[in-house]
Image: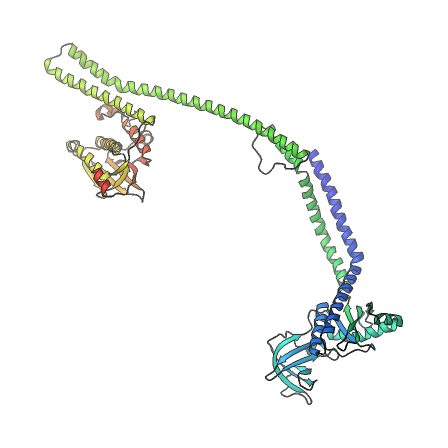
Amino acid sequence: MKKRGIVFKLFVVTSAVTIGIFALILLAQGLFFDKFYRTVKVHDLEQSMHTFGKQYAEQGDDPVAAARILGQFSNDNRAALAIYDTDLQRRSQDPYFITLQTKDKQVSLLFSSLGTTIGDVPPDLQIGATLKVDGIYMDQKDTIMQPSTLQPQTPNPDQGLTRIEGTITDLVLPQGQELSPFYTNTLVDNAFIAWRNTHPDADIQQLKVDNTVQSEWTDPWSGVTYAMIILPVTGSDGKTNYALSLSSLQPVGEASMLLQRYYLYLAPIIAVILLLLSFLYSRLLSRPLLQLSRTSARMARLDFQPMSNHSLRSNDEFGELSRNLDTLRHNLDAALRKLSETNEALSHEMEEKNRAEQLRKELIANISHELKTPLGIVKGFAEGLQDDVAADKRERYVQLIVTETDRMNALIMDMLQLSRFEVKAVKLKSQPIDIVRHIQALLYSFAPQLESRHLRVVTSGDETLWVNADPRRIDQVLLNLLSNAVRHTHESGTITVDWQVMNDEEVEIAIENEGDPIPAQDLERIWDQFYRAERSRDRKTGGTGLGLAIVKHIFELHESRYEVNNTENGVAFRFTLKQAPIDRETREIDE
């Protein structure tokens, strides 16, 4: 509850401050925006008038240059502009122009501010366009024309007019103005006369001594209020003229009303946003306390893992408390981790001891089982010899004793070899060998057994296949797998041996025999020591039960992939070896 109280208080205070500021902005807009807009409008217009005065004094007697600066001023400031002479009489000035390049000369079209309407000028005129004009030349060189009709539709011009056609090379025309500039230019004289009638001569005298006059005038016909600025400028003849600028203030009233309506619709949205930001801000400020609370709660649950991106970096009391908690968390985590590792080590050690004890018991049981029968046989035959059996039986008894002794010796040797594999005492001596030659040599050694049981061997694969392997250990693997295949193949059955390249790095050897399948529950256990799938045939087949366990270790030393599975006809063993590139020297070494 205390945590929520802090967040709530921050939220209320922040919301009140932000909404209060927003309300003050709305109030200031309603009370002062109109006045601010007028002040800025008049100030910017006055600055532009001073700039115009400098340009006007530099343009000389060129009417096109005068039209250019007049038109650009009107477009940039959305204002009408007129020039009055020393006697306060309006001078004839043309604020807009178009320059045409005809076949033989360049003609400038000057648009008078009096008698021209916005509809007289075709829209979208631009440099490069072709224009046809009827008008009257205003100079002796026929280079300045007062246009009468643009783009005339009649085949011939009216009497007294001249028609020209050319390409527009330069122009200044009305752009971006709320009212027609030609209309506002006609109001300039009305505004000037009204100003002279309403101001005493002192103001006129003050204007003549280089002072700027600012005033407002309302058009009695439209009711639109205009800002009027008058300042002295120097003419081309060096005399003082007066420039009068007239700019509409109508947009400020419309803008003010639109802003009020706009804020009326926008205020609820802004209020919601401010409340949301206030909530986020309050959550942000209360974050250190919330974080410390979460950290202490985790530590209470004995969870000492570090929280990413949640460490306080501030230098105040919250930061110090956070660092102290972090130090405590780290120390407790280290102690708990060390205790856990110790317990885990003890648990693992106990598991290893139990596993070793179980293996020891199984090994003793397996050895006892494997040695019990041959020892019983040896004892029985030895007692028969001791009792002086018939002479014709002695030789057979001795042979059986030797056979059983050899069997026990083979078992002991396999156990010794398996123990060396288990303690990682065996090191491979890998070299490139032709695995096909090794397979064929071992198959030849089984020829007597194959013939006695009428077994058939089918091989498939390339004539040579070179692999990296320890030749002695691979022969041991092949001998074990082939002997298993010979023992477990049905009478007159088939043994299939094939080898093939799997990819650029591995080859696969498969040995399959026709016979009884291995029970599914025994497929994974046949690699265990002393495990046999056919208990009833242990003595008959002569295996020690350690061969496949040794083969498994050899496979692992060669990093081979191996498997055994049942097929439609019997059982197949498969394993992989790494392929070896071969050259002449390697071939000679293997041979």
